[in-house]
Length: 371
Image (cartoon, rainbow, N blue to C red; front, side, top):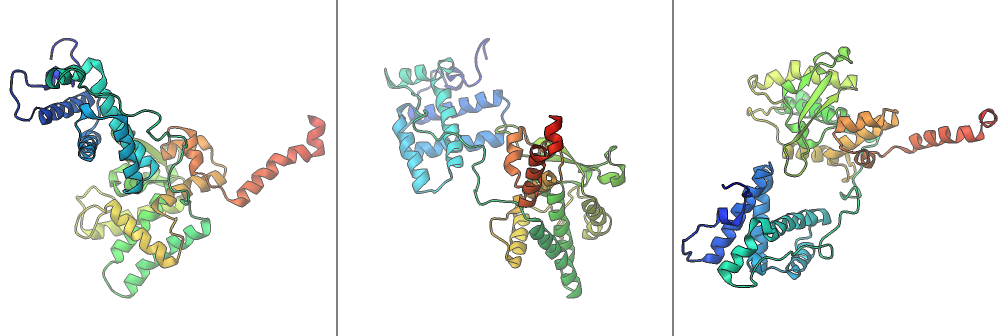
């Protein structure tokens, strides 16, 4: 690479002096290699780049055109197909449009030389043009675009759910059937997801070594702090880590009991995972979801409740208890307070109490006199 060359530049990816049997396909392959090199130079992960390349190939297949023949109308048709035929959500479609925009902008950037390369190979005026603009892409207007029906557990629902999970252990023991260890593990898993405000994947990927002491809470011993290593990543970046302080003593007791008395009975002492299976593997997120749905449906709870509702509930219940918002924001790993606010679904009793506190100074004669 010469001085001043950019990773992904056309002249670095095209083989000079070689006659291609299918020059169009060779050009597309070179473009995709160049885009991969450009993204690699930016420090993006392969797990981000590979789906982007697949998306571009899918768009080529949909349009039946090469990138230098694409126009904005192709994006219009593709978006309509994703909406009406594939029934994808606006957030998913916008992510696809963003990836396509990035590829288009890369090809149109004069510093990479793809326009000149296309004109040199296919003739004057044949080159990529910008295809994504504000009129044919979905704008990000709302902070939250998930299912509007998603909500946290009420306290009564949460108690019923956790009690039911515990009951499954007793039933398996009384019936002298297999599954008691797995039921105990899953009951503890759900308690951890709630009591530390975790996502489903974060919970499933916990290791025993992720627990540690917190000098500010010595009463919790080795379970005073939880190090979350697989937090939700910013696009293209590695998972974000964070530390979550333990705040619920009953949950710490449940974890300690599981680690000391139940987990060793799986016979997986050498395995690092917190949640192990009877076959010696790690519990997967899909398995967490399946057990959650089974318990929820058995109790007749609303289908709007998902494993993520446990995380929502942690934020809501701590807010109701008057815990500082900044503490909650840091613990759940939100970069901005508005994200935490979206997770907050305080109860009517809490709102009424807060309203009363706000109104009292206005109607208290002593307060009016002092002011």
